[in-house]
Each structure stands twice: as structure tokens, then as C-alpha cells.
Length: 198
Ligand SMILES: [Zn+2]
Image (tube, rainbow, N blue to C red; front, side, top):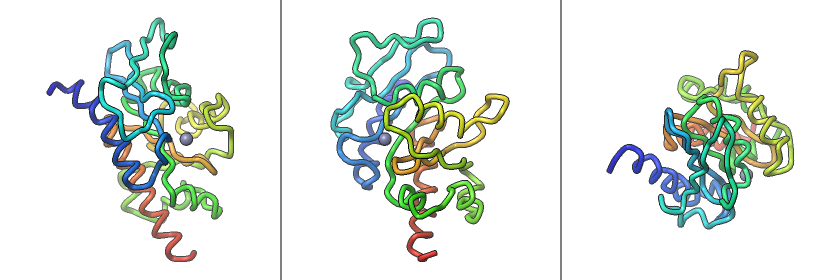
């Protein structure tokens, strides 16, 4: 199997694993992929059962003059969130999930940026940004606020993951599994924190 097929197959695999871990309900979450120097954005389809995703059901959105051509396609409702992070070749893969303890930690009042600083196994490998406030799902406001929370003033990405209050997380990586690992690390320390009762 070539690298392209492996990467696209991984998009379905991460969604299945996220579902098995209880980090999404059946139709939640989304994943995108853009390979270097290509004019296609691969993204999971809207509203399908995420455990069923295979390479043939991944939506291939053409990129023309730095714009997406979505006519007749059924991309994820969070396409805008993915595209802001992907459009300047800033990253290769974006993954949005609803991990239980991470959302619970934000609900309990934690800013995930501050929480991650207390756990060396996280901040060594995963840079966690400040929380994104409560905003409507699939909205441009959520897309821009997520993007702003992940970039520095010069427009480069400076965090691997941010939490979105009352909603989920957005993570990036070279590969869908890299983005998944950032979510996994953050979810683990949120679970530890909440279990400790602090
Ligand atoms: Zn969501």
C-alpha cells in the first residue's frame, strides 16, 4: 500500500478508535488530511456513522487558487475549522473529537494550557493552547476562534491541540495518528485530574 492510501486509511482508523474509546458518539467528530504540494483536501463526510469510514467514503475536496470547491460534495460540517489550519500548508492532518474527560475538565473550570504545564509527559510532547470559549458547532466563529487559539501573532501554528469548551478538541499532526496521540495525552491527564478530585 502506498503512503497516500495508508494515510487515507488511517483517517477511518482513527475515527473507529475514537468511537471505541467513547470520545465521540456515532456520527460525531471529523478528520482531514492534506498531503504536501497537492491540491486536494481529504475530509470525513458529514453525518455518516464514523465507524464505517473507508478510503472510498472520504470526501475529496479540490483546492483551486487556495479555495475549496465543495459543489455536490458532502464534507464535514466543520470543514471551515479544518481549512483554516490546512490552507497555508501549515499542517498535514487535523482531527476534531469530543473526548469525555477533556470536556469535563474544562467544564470544571480548568484552562487546559495551565493544566498541561503540571504534567511533564504532556508538555514535553504536546503543546496545549488556551481554551476556546463556548461557540456554536459548525460555525465560522468556532473555526476562527479555534484557529486563533492555535497560532502565534506571526501566523504560524504554535500549539498541537486546543480544547473547545462544552464541545471538544481540535488537534493537528503530520499524520492522523499523531493528532490522535495529542488528544490521547491530554485526555489522560484530564482523567487523572478529575479522578484526584482537585
Ligand atoms: Zn464537534
